[in-house]
Length: 261
Length: 330
Image 1 (cartoon, rainbow over the protein chains, first blue to last red):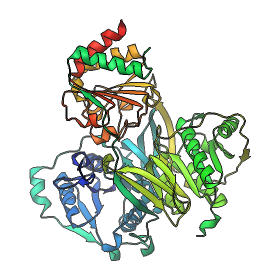
Image 2 (image 1 turned 30 degrees about the horizontal axis):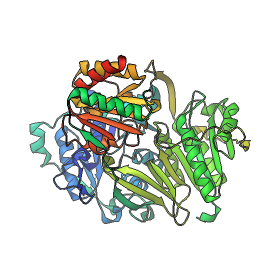
Image 3 (image 1 turned 135 degrees about the horizontal axis):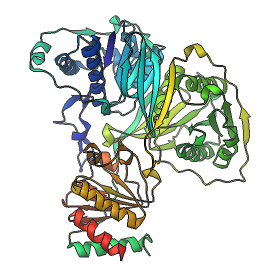
Image 4 (image 1 turned 120 degrees about the horizontal axis):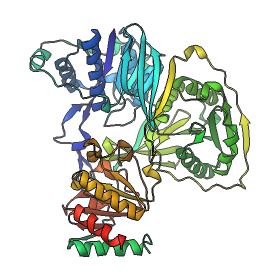
């Protein structure tokens, strides 16, 4: 079985803070990481490699420094890494991003394509299903677990609000994986050393199969009209008092707002 | 693409086992407001099987026309049949805009449809307004809720957006409203149906929905342990409230994910939100800042939660819960 996993390098958004004076993002010193949902997708692929001998390729689209997460993927145990990078891809929204990735994926033979459910910098959950559409493949999103019968058929467990669904789908297909699906393995020490000996294939527009008009800024139907720090409402009253008095203040407030009689 | 041809605000009505989901009514309420401003109409797309009897209720909630697609292929949601149905409506009717709930269903359907018809989709909007050129301005959190971005879709139609449940307001049912119910037939290409649903399993027996609660007693790291959560349960009972939590507590396994408030959990807007021992990371605040009254208790007087709280108490959350419960029980 051949598996391709799409991964993305993202800023660790839990480490981002807002400058209270200027209302802008403080990005200095914020680490870049492999997107958590993608990493769980990669772990799922590596488990299929361990169990069924699957061949695992990772692909990322991003600037030169995204090479780092491909090295990390090598150190976790993938067989092949592709770095999709070209100025023609710049300024892409989700649709244009999905076109570029689909263009690359047309050049790779696979039975299963895995993406993370969503990336923590955008939280859109769109690129996986959009790739599936461009490649005319079935999709299962919000994946928690997957079993392969060894021949053609996957049995999938998909998370929904009230529980889960069990689905059956034949290869080739696209899945988007939740970070709660598993605990990704660590890089192994030998793997880290080897990761820098291995070759990352760098692909640009000329290596992929896609209509140029669908790429980058030109291929993006959406654009950012404006971006701003969320306005915080004025802070309310703050008390630093003994417990009994504090409880009294809370009860008074609840009465004031007619929550208590 | 001649943008002039595209008219109407279309709302995807999510139903599960024939029950129309609240998020669909919230979208209708918002679509109604936008349509009134744009002098346009609201179309509700009701897809499923044996669901036609619910169409009239959507008119009372703001729809001018209900497009009913009743087909056995749509009895339970899978991506492809629903995508085909929506895309056929788009080709036929040329909607100006389309709103879908940002549920696990809507976030599966939305991107598939947007890619098939090649248009823009804004995910998880928290606000939708009309712009200077009558385009929709869709605002959403980005960078884990640290930043808000207003997105436009200038030259493609429909302008699509998904909206999280609990963010917008449904209108009260107005039985005097009039509208049309139209049965719509879809020609399915069944050769493309490749995902087979084997079963749907419900896990939460008591199916609580914290977005429906009037009062939420929410806990974070400062609550500490299981004992702390028991105390919160006690307070919640005296107030007829539900218990919710920050992500840290869900990750620690003290409480289920269905009770998580925040960017990766649920957006809530209760009359009263108690934040006990919650520091107020932006990811959490994004999910509760619209609550009518926020009372926060935290040991750290610099905790960011105090910036959104109407009433802040610097102190030990566990002590306050205990005393407050005692006083209320009297």
